[in-house]
Image (cartoon, rainbow, N blue to C red; front, side, top):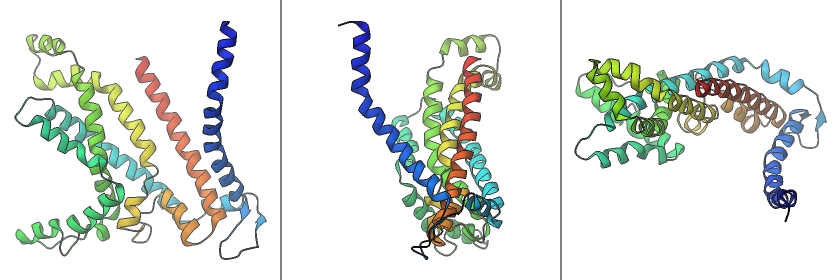
Length: 290
């Protein structure tokens, strides 16, 4: 069989999978785009009509849109900061030999396998509850008034919950990269008189740069769609204090029954997510070339 025939046969064999993948992506996106151009409200069946870009205008001029964009950026940046710094510190700690190292590594990675809804419920009822929560008991034990985290600092509380979930992922990636560092480089730096901080800044950190960019890229893509933690804990409130772009789409679609406006918000969220992804991919590309 010739090379050309082999290539043709290979393309025919993978074509069903490619077509299935394209349909899996294009059909939902196409339906969302179609609904975003329609006046489609579940409370008014049979009243559907074409409205053009009115849904987009309504969504972008929604008073909650500005707060949703700010909260989304604050959530992503806050979680990235905590998980990157915390993951780096934990990776440095777990890279050191000590008794029970294997058990500690398993315990550190375990939160990543907890479902977001379960994690949010545990934090809401067991830790942040102002009456029976662990933090409330600790505050009372030192003579302080319990702090209602979800009411007084809703967005910061969600950042803490999501960071707890994603910290193991960052730790695992950074620990793997740290273990691939040639020990001879550290030994040579130590023989040249470099202290621990100098070895970390000039040897370890440049080696971890690629791993850090990968952590930032993957987490950003997933953090932009954070939803379950908000639904379970604060419902986007008080007011719009913890409403993100994803949750605003949910409010328009399933709470206000306005499928058209919710679909328009979904398209806007997809566009913004792609802009962020392209920017991060370029940043990673430059980092890899360097």
